[in-house]
Image (cartoon, rainbow over all chains, first blue to last red; front, side, top):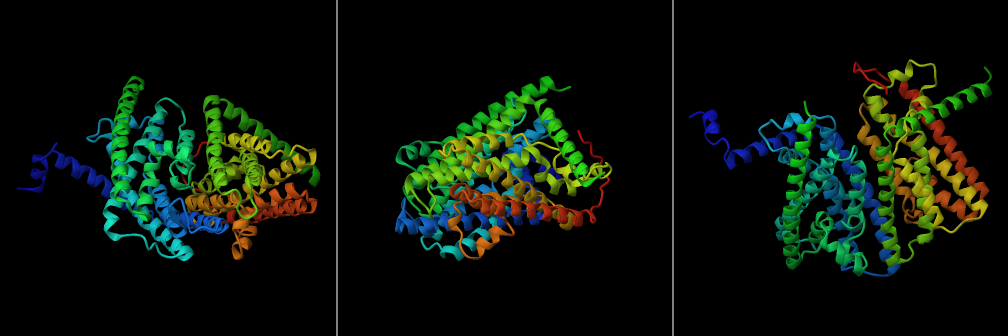
Length: 280
Length: 267
C-alpha cells in the first residue's frame, strides 16, 4: 500500500488533521530558522531589558535593605523577568497579520482552503515560537547569570509542569491577539488595541512588576483577569514552584482559553459573513 | 542664492511638507484619532507602573515620582515632536532596504530632510499630548520652567529623530537592517525612561555617546530642576552633533545605495 493511499484512507480523521497542522508548524519553524539573524535581535532585546531590570531591582532591594520582596529574592525576581520576557518576546504575534489579511481581502482566499483559518495561524506561529524561545532564553539566562548568579530554587522535576503552563500561556495570548486582529472587521486600524493590550500585560500581566508586588486591592482583581496567566503564572512557577498555585493557574487558564476561543470562533464567523457580503 | 536664502527656502519647503502630512492624515480622521488616543492610553498604562512602583518603594537613587512625571513629560513630548514632524526617521531602514529612496533622489531637493519630513506618524500626537499633560503634574508653572521644559523637549526631539534615522542608515551597510535598527533605536527610549542614577560606570559613558539616552531624559530633567542655562547649551551642542553624525552617515551610506527593481508608489 503506498503512502498516498494511506493518506487518502485516513483523510478527515483527527490524526490526519493533526498531521496537517504539525506540517504547518514544521514549515514555519524551518522558515524562522532561515531568519535567525532577526531572531538574534530578540536576544539582544532581552539582554537590554534584563540589564535595565537588574540595575533597577538591585537598587530597590538595596534601598529597602531587604532580602525578600513580595515573597521573591533578588535572584528569583530577576529570573522571573527572564521567563516573563521569554514569553513576551517569543509569543505568536498574529494580530498584525490578521489585520493585514482583513484589510487587503486576502482572508477571502483562505476560506476555501482545507484548513481552519484560526488554527492555521496558531500552528504556523507556533513554529516560530520554538526558535525564538531558544535564542531568547540563551541570551536572557546568560545576562541574568552574570548579574545575579544561577537560580538555585529551580527544580528540574517541575519543568514539564512549567512548560505546560507556558504552552497554555502562549495559547491564551494567541486567543487575545487573534481577537485584536479580527477587530479589523470593525475598526480600520487595530494597532492602538495592540499597544494597549501590550501595556496592560506590562502592568496587570506582571511583565514590569510581579503581581505579588502590586497593592492588595489591585492584586485581587489582577489575579482574576486573563493577563496575569500569560506572563506572571508561568514565570512565577518557574522561579518559585508551588503545587497548589499550579493547579489554580491551570484551572484559570483552561477556563479563559475556553471562553476566549469560543468568542474568537464567533468573531471569525461574524467577520467571515461580513466578508462574503463585501466580496465579489 | 545666498546661504541664508537657501536655508529659508528649505525651511519653507519642510513647513509645506508638514502641512501636507497633516492634511493627508486628516483624510482618515477616525483612524488618525483612534491611533493618537490609543498611544495616549498606552503611555498612561506604562506610567501606572511607576505610580505603583513609587507607591511601594517611594524613592530610587534620588528619583521620586515628581522626577518621573518630569522625565515622562520631556521624553513623551520630545518623542511626539520628533515623529509628528519627521515621521520617516523611524522607517528609514525599511525604505533603504526596499529601494524606496529613488523617488527622493530624482527631485531637486536635499534628500535627507525631504525624506524624513515626508510623513507624519499619527500615533505621536498621543505622545505629544501625553507629554504636555504629564508636565501639568510636575507643578512647575513659572515661565522659566515652562520655557526650559519646551526647549529641552524640542532638543530631545532633534536627538530622537537623528538617532532613529542614523540607526536606520545601517541598511546602507548591512542590507535589510529593519529589525536591528528597531532594536538599537528602541534602546534609546528604554534607557531614557529609567532613573539615570541606576546606571553606573562604563554604561554611563555608553548612554552619553553611542546611545545618547542621557540627553533625551536625565539631562533635560536636570536642566529644568536646576535651571542651568549652561547645561541647556550643552544639550543644544549634543543635538547639533546628533544632526551632524546623521548627515555624515547618510552621505556615506548613500554612495552604497542600490536601487531595486520594485515599483514603488508614493501617495
